[in-house]
Amino acid sequence: MSATRGKTPAPKPAGRTGLRFFLVALILIVTAILATALLANEQRNLKKVLVALGLPTTFLAKSKPSEPTGEKPARREPPRIALPAWTFQDLQTPEQQFLRVIRSDPKALCDELRDAGFRELEWKAGAGERAQWECSSLVSFPRPGEDKPSSIFIFVKGSGEEEITSFRVKLNIERPEDRQAVTTAAARAAAVFLDHVRWADAASVTLQIQALKEFDLKRFGSRIQFKRESDEVTPRFNFLANQPPRARPKSIAELYFDRSKWLAYGDAGLRSFVKGPTDWNVPAKVPNGKEPATDATLGEKPSAGHAP
Image 1 (cartoon, rainbow, N blue to C red):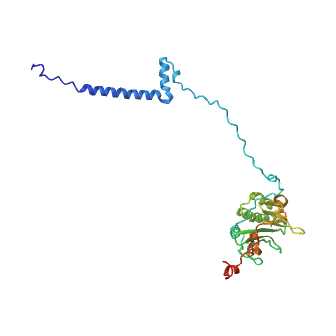
Image 2 (cartoon, rainbow, N blue to C red):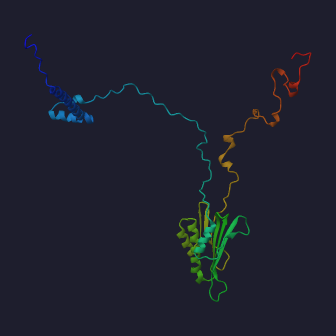
Image 3 (spheres, one colour):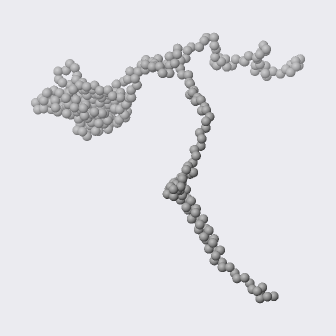
């Protein structure tokens, strides 16, 4: 054997293969990053690069899909519903009003009046009517040497300690010089009541009381009035707050229901299939003229001469 055949080939350096793999991977990564950056935002960056290089960008425009040329289906009309002829008819019903019941503790009102300076107010059961409670106070304005002093009388009436039935302040002005003191005290008592029941425009009401100006107000079923008593030489006024009873119609069905229109009387020849108690125990009819079976016949045994 020759010397050349015994020699082994020199090994190739291993670093070249790894370097090639690294360069290929790096090129792929950089290409992917560039492609992502150029194609992002609807290829906006790619268009900028093409415009900067002076290349056309028309091939990047997306073609819109052609609209269908078929005929549009005919639009269906909305369904129609047959309504009675009296659906939108004016029934001429009375106007409805919102009623507000004075649901408040009358005993608490008496306590507020007592705190306002009106003493001798004691909440107690009424003497005349059942489940009625009341409290009252008489405030006098005496003068030396005078027999009949001017005064105001406060009267609160409640139902079952949960509803104020009426509130009254009576003014007795025996002398003209007592007018300011009497009207001021009456206005203060009325202000306590109006504030307790949350009545609107309470200030204007108290000013009218101080001016002895008559009024009559109705709101939400409640009524307050200030009126002078007639046939009296001495000026006497009454401030009254209550809820007058409502007048009910004789028949409210006449306004909403007309039998001739909505439910006419039936024909006498037509009979209902619903039977009353008198027909419940009557045996049912059997066809072909046979008699219906009764409890007695059902319990009998057939005789010897008859077949079962």
